[in-house]
Image 1 (cartoon, rainbow, N blue to C red):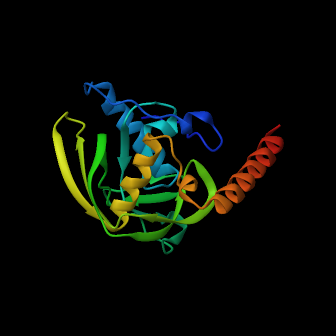
Image 2 (cartoon, rainbow, N blue to C red; image 1 turned 90 degrees about the horizontal axis):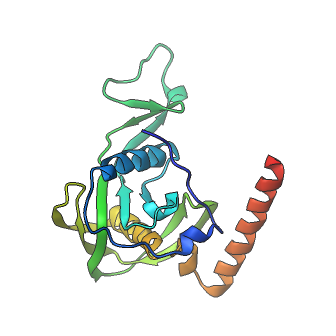
Length: 197
């Protein structure tokens, strides 16, 4: 497995619409592994292929895993078995979902929650989303599947599908909030790039 580069605002790839995947090839298994590793290490709960520079309708999600700092263990306590340790953190309870060509076929209700994004670092904003959704997609094995989702899973799926459509969560904000966010993010990126030189 390999950790992938996550593109951040204002990288142009994030504004591009991803193309549907006609045939699920074996290479997508490695892509899924690499994207999941990248997501868990960030840490995040979802990652779309667009965020790693691939314009394909492919995303990974896990809203159920647990993350604990090794430093939080009591003296003499060892991490439990069957966990993964990454960058000083214990990851357990993984339940990844891989969605290929996801399409929301039903929406119900409204929900508003503060969102963040690996492609929009250090910025949070409240975004309106559908409370419940039904999504149709292909699995990594190429099978057609439909799932119903609500709560955090529904929000995460909608957020990641936005990436596949060339949208960031800040694009869903009011004009005033969006402009403020973009200016703040551009300043932060410029300061980071100047600091890296």
